[in-house]
Amino acid sequence: MYKREFDTLLASGKIPRALFLYGENPFLIGYYGARVVERLSLLPEEKNSFYFGEYEFQALKGILAQSSLFGDRSFVLLRLEKKLPKKETDALLGALEKNPSAYWLIEFYKAENKSATEYSQDCKAMAGSFKGNERAEVRFFDPNQGESLAILRERALSLGMEVEDRWLLSLWMVQNQELGLAYNELEKFALLGRKPEMRDIERLSYGLGSVSVEELCVALLEKKEALKIALALEEEGIEEMALCGEMERFFYQLFLFYAHIRVHGNSDSSEILGYKLPKMIEEKKARAAIGLKEAHFFRIFTALQEWREKIMQGRSRGRGLFLALIKIQAIL
Image (cartoon, rainbow, N blue to C red; front, side, top):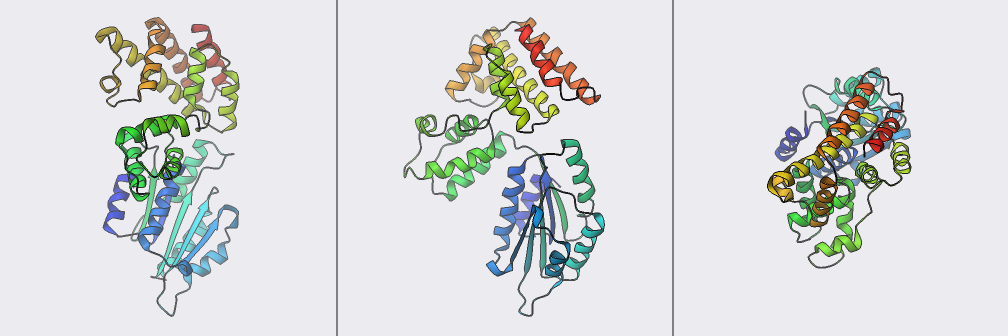
C-alpha cells in the first residue's frame, strides 16, 4: 500500500501485526515507524529492537513466538539494510501468527553500497511476504510540498509552536526541500519561546542543508567551479537517474519563470508554480531565468535527455554526470 492508505489505517487504530516499511524516502520510513510505536502505546518492557548488524534470526524468532503469561504484548522493531532470506522471513511470520500478542515491524533502508535498482529488487522480494491478513507492506516516495508541510505543521503543534504555513514553507525550501532536516530544525525554533519570524530562518537556519543538486545547477549558471559540488554529490551516494531528474526539474522550473516573465512581465511564483516561494528564492530564480535564452533551454534539455537515455541503456558507467556538466558549461 501507499502512504495515503496507511494514514487511513493508522487513523482507524487497526495496526497490522506484521509491517514492512520501505521506499525512496528514509525519513518517512523512520517517521512512520515511530508513529506505529506511538499508536500501540507500548510499555518499555514490551519493546525489542534489532538495528542493522544486530539481527539474529533465532533471538528474534524466540521473542515473536513467546507468549506472556500476563497477557503483555511483545513488539519487535527490526531496522535493516540487507534483505532477509525468504526462508527466515516466512519462519518469523509463522511464529508471529501463532502468537496473537506479538507485533513485528521492519524498517528497510537502502544501503550505501547498493544501487536504487538493487534496493528496489530487494524491496519487491521482501514485500511479497507481507500481504494478507494482519500483514501490510508500505512504500514511501519523496513527499511533495503539501505532505511535507502537513508533517511539519503537526510537529510544530506538538512542540507548542505557533507558526504560519508560509514560514514552514520557507524553512523547508531553505533546507533544500529535505523534510528530515526541516523537521529536526523545528526543535531549535521552539526554544525561542515566541512565534518564529522569517528573519529567524535567515539568522539560524540558512545553509544547514547538505550539498544539493540546486547548488550544482546554480554553480553552472554562475560559471563557478561545479566539479567540486558534483564530486560531493557523488560521495553522498546520489543515484545518477535521480540526479538527472533533479537537474531536469531545476531547469524546467527556470524555463517556467522565463516564459512567464516574457509573457506577463512579472515573476510571481504563485502563478508560475502554484505556490509562493520565499521572496529571496523567487528573486534569485527570476534573475537566473532572464539571463538565459530559449536556445539555451532547448540545448540543456537535449543534453540532459541524452544523459537519461544513456543511464537507461546502461551506457553511462558513472561518467554521465561529468559529460553532462561539460556540455552544459559549453552551452552556457
